[in-house]
Image (cartoon, rainbow, N blue to C red):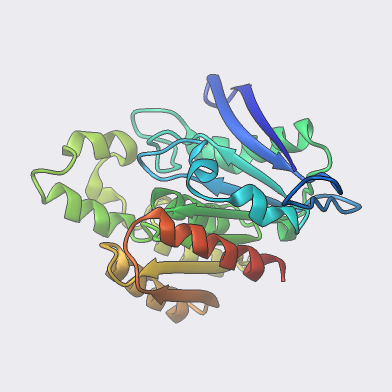
Length: 263
């Protein structure tokens, strides 16, 4: 496998940003790891980070390079800041960057990356889980599958919980991202709204996966969202088990996601 650290300019963000990229490589003499680059275009997984992290976190907390080596796929790990992968109310247009510009840039830089939605996965943890499902439901023409690990799937509900607690981040922080908190429900930042709209427009729906630990503070948030999605007619692969909001569980479950997506 090849690991590239890429610094580049985003026209959408109007600033330089970074991503780490794993590319397949055929290797025979590498001790402990066999690379497996296949003929044709590479399937590509975009891995999104959570609130406290950046584009390096998937390499630092998991063995993602080892996990994907046998599959011969590419992995893109971009920096999303504290954006919740939205076009921020008082900030930068990260949704447009992730849904439109980033896939285009990646395919220009790395022409072997497939441009088929069936070959493109968005997956993420916590904030990144929300971002991944948002890409699946809001940009299904690009992302044919989306997977969330302990995702903030009902962001309106979570925001109300946070702003009601005085020790949490002040409301101005969240308003900078989403604007009026009361305006999230029924907006483009509401995954339930995106799911309903996608069905009404009769566009292709993405494959969806979600895992959350039973001791996670987001567990009920996930359970209720899974039920809502199924009531809308979505087929969602849902899994749960012992665990809370930490990487030792996500490291295990990203392997499950890769098998679910590829096999």
